Length: 247
Image (cartoon, rainbow, N blue to C red; front, side, top):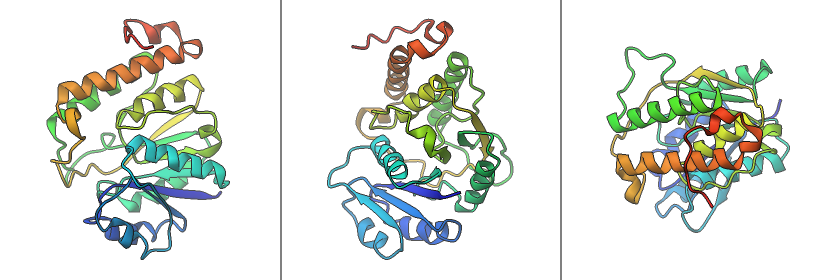
């Protein structure tokens, strides 16, 4: 089984050296997707034996994931593991994703920060936890999923399944499109526990999305628009109460 670990980065000079040093202990093939960093991130990445994609302008977290998906499809990988570069995803968990992939009973292996919490777990910012819980509950209700963490970016993806997706979302609402298409395409989902780590509770979503009410409304609109788009592949119950007004 050939696997690739992909890490989106944007101005991560504070973390990227430590993260790459540790990730390479667990994964021989690593891809950095640099979303137009303006700090020393590119120079630090160049110190390591990793593959890289670099854009001149900042286009968004979702675009970076789409670039990673495309790279994995074009280069013949069987599994793609995505993780963040802010030390909130523990590289020592990578073998657990590989082990789950080798079990061959899922197409998406999604990390959950809420499957197992306890001593040593951090406390997420209240608005982030509340929005995660509310959107995760709506995803479960509409799509018949059984998620505990709809927003965790630490995931394993069967690359053959990614080839069927038609993802267009560039920003942080990317999971809304992703989960709708997972359900519409009949992909098998398995959650595994990952550590709940919040090193920087002040990190910004950018612009108006830093307002929790605005962020929740944006996520819900993207979700409802995607439900409309895939209504032909979803049960009627998924569309109940959807009034997105999408063009």
